[in-house]
Structure formats: C-alpha cells, structure tokens
Image (tube, rainbow, N blue to C red; front, top):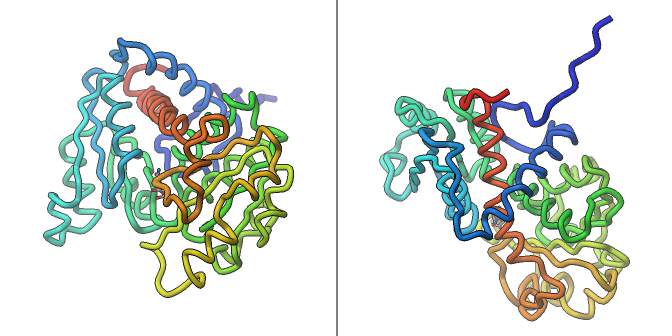
Amino acid sequence: MCSAPRPLGFDQRHLLGIEGLQPWAIQDLLDRADGYVDLNRSPDKKRPLLKGLTQINLFFEPSTRTQTSFELAGKRLSADVVNMSVRSSAVKKGETLIDTAMTLNAMHPDVLVVRHQDSGAVALLARHVNCAVVNAGDGQHEHPTQALLDALTIRRRKGRLAGLTVAICGDVLHSRVARSNLLLLSAMGARTRVVAPPTLLPTDVHLYGCEVFHDMERGLEGVDIVMMLRLQLERMEGAFFPSVREYFRLFGLSHEKLARAKPDALVMHPGPMNRGVEIDGLIADDIERSAILEQVELGVAVRMGVLEVLTRELRGER
Ligand code: NCD
C-alpha cells in the first residue's frame, strides 16, 4: 500500500484565495514570511532570489498599501517589477479583461499580481495566462495576502492563532478582507465572531462557522483581537445605515466598547481607515493597543513569502 507523500509546503500554481488552502500550506507561507521580517528591518534589504524574473502588478482599483508592498516585495527579491495602472492602460479604451491578460502574457511575465473590482475576475484571468497569478483583492470575494499578513501580525504578537477569539467588526458584507480572514482564522483553529448591523452582513455568514453579534459591546466581550473594517461606501448602492454619526455610536470602536475585550486585546484595521467613522483615531494611534502599522510592515514580508513560493519551480527549487 502506498501512502500519500507528505506535503512539503505551499504547492499551488496561483494564490487566488484562502479557500481551499490546507492549514500546512498557510503555515508554510506564514513561516516563510516571518523569515523576511528581520531582512526588511535591516539596511541591506535586497536578496537575489527572483533575479531575472518579471512581475507585473495590474491594479484595476486604487491601492496604496497593497500595490506598494507588492512592488517593494518584488524589488527586494530582485525581480523586475512593472506597475500597470488602469488609468493609463488600454482597458480605458475598451479592451476586455481577457485581452489585457493575453497581451501581458505575451510579454512573458513570471508573476501577475492583480486587483479587480469584480469578484471572480482574478481567477478568470488566471485561466488565460501561463504565469503565476496572485489575487490582490477581487471585488467582495477574497484578499488572501491581507488575511496572511493579519495572521502573521497576530501570530507574532500573541504567539499563536489557535484558540484565540477574533471579532471582525463593521462592513462585513462588502469586505473581501473579512471573508479571507474568516476562512484563514477558522482553518488555523481560531474562534471567529462577526459584529455588524444585519444590513452589513452577508446572508450566508453562518457558513463561515462564526458567531454573529449585532450588539458591539456583547460581541467584543472577552475577545483577544478586535479587527475593524472600513465602511466601503464605494460598494454601496442606497443606504445601509441611518447616518455616519449613528454608525459610529453603535459600531465605531470607542474606548468604552474596547473595554469589553481582554485587557491586552489587539486592535487591527486593514486600512485605509475612516477615523471617527469605524474607529476612534486615538485608539488607532495608541501603540500599546493598535497593530495597524505593524500590519502594513508585515505586509511586505508576507508578499515576499508568497512570491518566493510561487516562483519555486521556475527557480529550479522543489
Ligand atoms: C482593503 C481592500 O482593498 O480590500 N484594503 C487593503 O488592501 N489594505 C480594505 C479596504 O479597502 O477597506
């Protein structure tokens, strides 16, 4: 009888989402990313690992953190990195997503990093190219590298993921960050809660194995991690809550509400944040409580880890 070979680590061609990833593959990505944190803090940040390889960042939606960190990650590993913003591309002239993908593919990139406003668009594009594709956020669907950098932040601060209770609060309905985090955290043995008004929750939220709260004070009771989400007004048609003032009163993170969480609970936010809407600016800036800038810092290391595993075969490693 032959037994299945023990997996060596992340073994996919693309990183399109957290869905379907095994805990050992997530662990492998987190461990590799962790290995880049000190390098990124040192004066000599460059390594020759991706020398000769080409990475194209194709962003159909605006981005500060994600695009910059993918660019830095590629450059620190010595890839040739090209940033294509849709503002200046032929997409504005009516080229379809598939035509754009096939055009870029003809130039032999090794990695395509794609952000798109439509859920599923990145997976569709991946079917038309020969290179590795990384989903840098597709519509309301997934944002796998954000969930990985959130997990790395938690793991470094708390020493583990399993057994922690994480409350994901706010506009869960429109959030690809929430979806990827719910999948990753439960795969890694954390307990998850969502805290939101009913209008800002997906109808299938119960499928994610999380507890659901509509009252923030109760939802934050005893949690280890408070993960706030941005109110994604650009994805809303019509009114989902009475007013921004009312939203902050009920679902904004204030000192009073945070006092319900564990005394050492960590506050997180993927950014960009709306101060005074979903979070009190003083909490966001409190370096004792908030890990928001650490999330940004670790984002570069996570993207380096992802680029490393996706190019393993190209580099003759296996
Ligand atoms: C998130 C995104 O784009 O999904 N931001 C990010 O990547 N740091 C969250 C958001 O836009 O609110």
